[in-house]
Image (cartoon, rainbow, N blue to C red):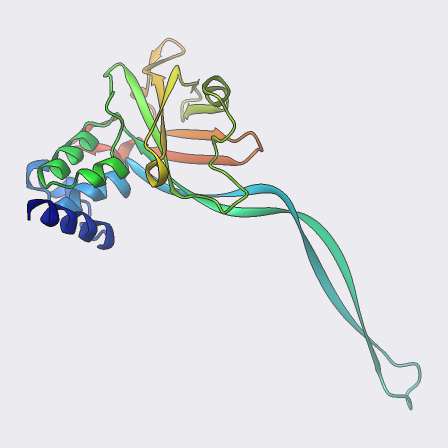
Length: 243
């Protein structure tokens, strides 16, 4: 009976639209409902969903039709001629990803609330990685909607060193960092990669006191680009920064 109740709760949370409305501004995590905890992980200043149009490696033909009407003489019937021009373009399909600033303490609070509610399946789908050291910034990218075949997730066919070289964190004060390491976790619908950036960039703390935003970017081996900008002024809890 208990397993059945937990399964029903998990399915209900997956199906219910997020209407919690910035719960982190209104009450402490201990008072959050499971829906409110899930909102922090999926739709908040710490979690952004983004669509990326990815090339498949195939091409599509696009035909532009043009109609012209001719009349050789005033007493003759007009003649309409249709002509077409074919253009070959790369085929693209949509992939949807969620990018989380996983090192924020608020995300860990969300996981705690979901586990207390028995929604461990949601933690597996949306939660940050288990390892969250204080001395690193952790950004997690997760597949929400895989691109249609033959396209693959952005990190396909890239080993860890190649992927790290195509990933960066750029700040508004013109500093840039590459991940020191990355961790792959989750499978299937929960497939994700977490990138670990140093909290010191070019000899200064990151993000700095004057940093307004930090932009995470990742490029696939085919040139597809994912970019997400986190506004640090919005990533505050009780007036304190949480990133």
